[in-house]
Length: 266
Image 1 (cartoon, rainbow, N blue to C red):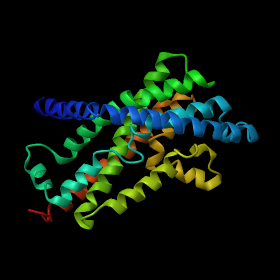
Image 2: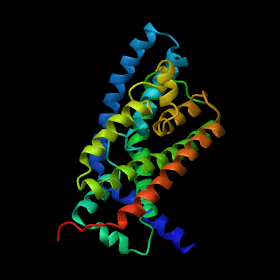
Image 3: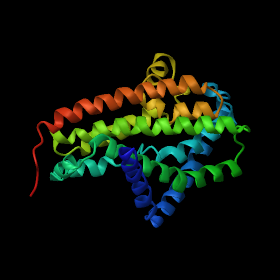
Image 4: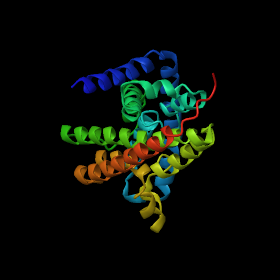
């Protein structure tokens, strides 16, 4: 019970911390809205030429765009998660302080990232999504249960996203500077999550492969639940499986890394 309160407090602290950056949040809302408009008109032109591309109609494609803008910062697909701070603490040697805490390193940073994700969803994701839904024809569900199922899929996507980024951050134990690994993860994440185009659009075996990868659990999986293209329980099973695999891998890498910690700096 005490541990639950501890990690709950860490998550709440993460939420409050990002809530203080009001100007950055407002700028992010504006940026997401502008990019959403650019992508929407691109998608409209594409779906005019190829109706029902990837199994989506035009309204579903538009909805997908605004959903992507709502989840971009929520899932830190282009950076902005706690992994940057964690890598810096590894580089400077401050990670030694974290290891002395009476708390689990992975759960501590997971809690902090969940708090960050929740704020980004509410503070930066809702406004562009509502703006897009008001301005363009969208395919939004009318029943509450679908929205609840969608939010559950988003919560699992947050855990999967952290699992991927935690592994990238831990690479700094060996690389000392994980910037290159981080940038590569952004490129792969954009391509394989469906942020550029829905994974349904990918042809043949390429489409089959990318939909099996963990990045598919980030954007494509919640989108399919919201759009009625996938059942929630099979989606949850897919996301939860990757969450277990990634967190387990992170636990193993963390154990190997902390056995050979080299304190950098002072």
